[in-house]
Amino acid sequence: MKKRISFEKLIHKMIFDRARGKQKKKLLALLNRGYKIERANGFEGIEIRRGRVWRCITVSGRDLSPSQF
Image (cartoon, rainbow, N blue to C red; front, side, top):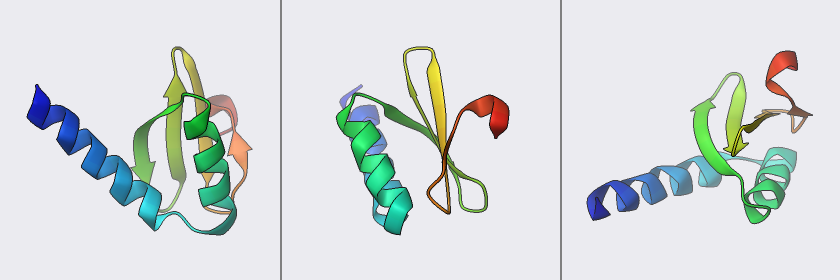
């Protein structure tokens, strides 16, 4: 269990480090509000979620709901 948690933290750190500009600012703001990184796709964006609420931050920094993604 502990290895899984440290692996997730490592992956999340790598995703956060690769984000640039507006995307990084929005990602940091949402992570501070309790969202967790779920998926990252370099061409589309980063998907995050808190409970049942999903958001996507595109490469350009736009914050979209999954229905718009």
